[in-house]
Amino acid sequence: MRIKTEYLGRVEGEAGVRFEIKNGRLAELKINIWEPPRFFEGMLVGRRYDEAPDIVARICGICPVSHMLTSIRAIEKAIWFEPGPETIAARKIMAYSQIASSHLVHLVMLALPDYEGKSSLMEMMSARDGAECGKNGETEKAKKTKKAKVKDLLKKFINVKEAFNGITQTFGGRALHPVSMVVGGFTSFPGEKEIDRLLSGLASAEDDLEDIAGLISELKPPRLETASELVCLSDDGGYAINGGRIVSDMGLDGTEEEYEELFEEKEASYSNAKKTRLRERGQIMTGALARVSLQSRWLGEKARKPAFSISLSSSSGKNPFNNIMAQAAELLHFWQECKKLLEASGAEKQKKQKFPGRPPAREGEGRALTEAPRGLLYHSYAIDRTGAIRKANIVTPTAHNYLAMEQDLRRLIEDNIDLPKERLKSLAGMLIRAYDPCFSCSVH
Image 1 (cartoon, one colour):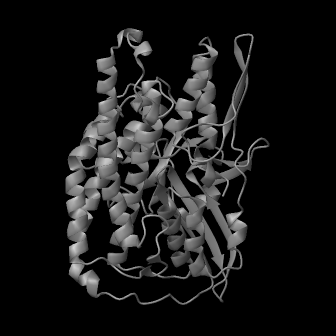
Image 2 (spheres, one colour):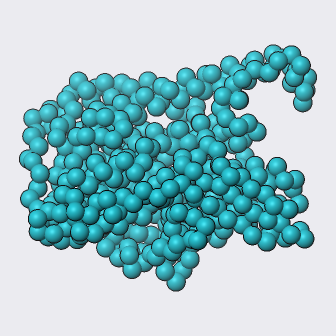
Image 3 (cartoon, one colour):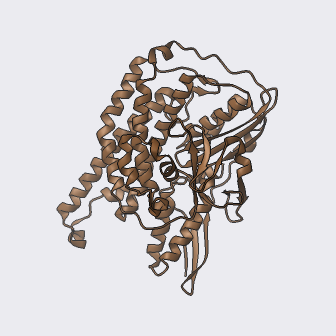
């Protein structure tokens, strides 16, 4: 029996799944990321170093902030530039607001329909005609009640999304592909009134955010345990996002500078994306589940209920389906962190601060890691003395997770091999969406 999904729905980018079952056993399985490659690494060669962040932001329409932040950090390390504390705090706010916004879209729009047996949120909301009444014991009144609940969920979604987007836009100049976050700092900082407005937006979204996170934390995911090594950044100063040491649940501990000695990329003949793994160790899983599992001590009070519903002390903490529960925990955590940083932002001081201008070019190499919404994001650059980029390397979260996704899908199909064809297809899509992949990023 051959099963294939040529186009996976409710994911960012283009990919398909094919597998074959012979004599009751899984004979072959492939996740084919067929989105065309875009050659950003080659595109950067010869460009001036301060052009790179704007260029790499176009790799993704969901996580442009993460690409910009990682690029900026790698470049600043290459030219020996140290940003000031106000810049570091503002970059954290940018990262937190973007990750929260991305998680929100994934949880409500992409993942939730899987748990309702629907193809989309719109299908969840659409009312059936009278002929459908009574099916599965459901009355017309019950269907209208469901529709009203989904409409209410959408209102909450929009309210929370606007609060986080407002933060990104205010600090970055735009919510998508920011313009004021540059190598060397920010071209402008928000004033006191703008900070107050952002805090007001967060306050108005608090109850809606808790309702959404609570809804996700109550879902019942399928059972599966990954054999992948959970990998994320770690920092003794708090929940690591913009830099830190590389750690894992199996004892890995390394620096950003050691990344290319620790990791390796391999091509897949049937895909336009590479598979990244730990040298001499194997597949990894990175993203919200890895972060929450390994950095749980730093989570704020609001985040603890959905985080610990994952039962991190047991093997269920390695269930890739639980990635959505970890994203719900991070939603609450980043709300709390944004609030703290905004309250302590020193708006009047920032208002008077002027951007010192572009740092001078210096010959050097820089490597940087950050935590994007979907996990580890790596950028490295070699810059010559004129400020031109001579070499660039980018490894995205989906490339890091590609091998794990495929191996977990293999295990999922083998564990449920007697299920009907359509149910197997449904489970396959559900698992891949749990990883929240960005296939566009993977073929950068």
